[in-house]
Structures are given as C-alpha cells and as structure tokens.
Image (tube, rainbow, N blue to C red; front, side, top):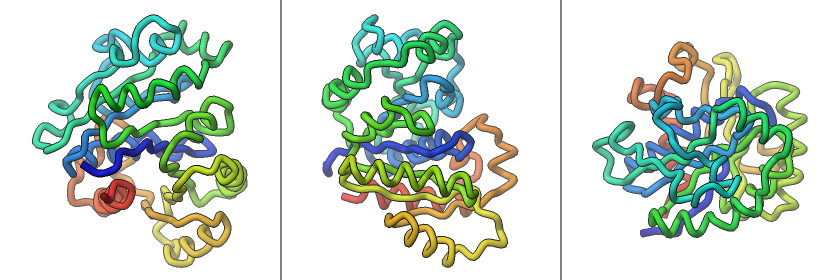
Length: 254
C-alpha cells in the first residue's frame, strides 16, 4: 500500500464541475485498486450522493449529524462499491451531506466547527484502511473550507476559462500558498473546442504558479447526462474519461 492521502477538490465558484470530477476520480481510484472515500462537505448545496445513485430516503445519518454530535463519523459512511464499480479491485465509500431544509438552514445560520471534522480524518482513514480521502468542498472563500484544505496533502483547484474564475482562483491560490499545502494543482474544465490548450496551459501555469494536471473540454455528453450518473460509466472511451484517468494516476501515483 502506498502513502495515504487527503485530497480536497475546490473551486472559486459553483458550476465548475467540482462534484462530478470528484465522484468520477473516486471511482477511478477504486478501479486502480485503491480504498477511497468521498466526503461531501458542500453542506450548503449538497448533491454528490446523486452521482452515486443514492436517494435521500436511502440515507439515515449524514455528515451533518456527526458535526452536530449525534453520531460518530463511522456511522455516516456508506459503501457504494457494488453500486458504482462492482468489478473494481479497490473499494469506494461515501460520506454524504444532508439535503433536509432544516439541516441546510442551520448550517447557513451557524456554520460548523471545522476542527471537529479535521480531528476525525485520521480516525476515518484508519477505520476504513483508506488509501485516499477525497473531499468535495463548498465553493468560494469560507473559513471551514480553508481550514479543511489546510490539512490536505493535495489541493486541486478547478478553473474555467472565465474572467471571474481567473480573479477568484488567483485569490484562492494566494491563500492556499500561505496554508503550505504540500501539493497544489490546477484542473481546467469546460474548455471550448477553439481554445489552444497548449497556450492556455502555459498561461494558467504562469499566472498561478501551479501545474495544470488536467484539461477537460466542454462537451454535450456531459451536459446531457445532467449529474444523473457517473460520466466514466456512461462514456468509458470518451476523451474526458481518459483525461480524468490521467488526473487520477497523477494524484494517486505511488
């Protein structure tokens, strides 16, 4: 077994494809023989469980229940291996967030104590014997996300070729640098077909100072899927699937 890793996937704005990419990377990791769990900390707008085929009524305890002290973090874990990658040599788990109006309203009003979550990461990884913990964050600049990112081994910043994303990601990159996260990478998503990818890669790396480890094109197949499932399952030979596989290999290389 290689070195275990905590990997946060973050973006300045919503709609960058963060949850889709996180879920697909998790399944690819399981196919690589890794034991991986996905933690949905986008508590204000959760939804990664949908990508794994879970309805809310199939979920009894969530990450919110743990944060409010109602249960242990191990009680919020769901094994999704047979559901999303039954032939994988590894395993995949999900720690979902709550979709109830009450829970989301309370999170919006009170926030949550990030230190309680951070202090239990090792416990969760030991309990499941994880190689990798993938964290789907809440987009933007907020205290809880920054505190969680600070204890990550790898931070992936998603960016679209959009001027607002450039400005916002520049701020995120500056803060991430101050947090002294061991490895920070960029993934460019929803790239138009007419864009020169080599020039875009060079421009992003020069502007932000971090390596671009993925260039994902804008495509109709992804939009048509509409988060109703995992792209890599629906389109196993698509160029996006190949690009996601290369990202997974890069961040999980032993």
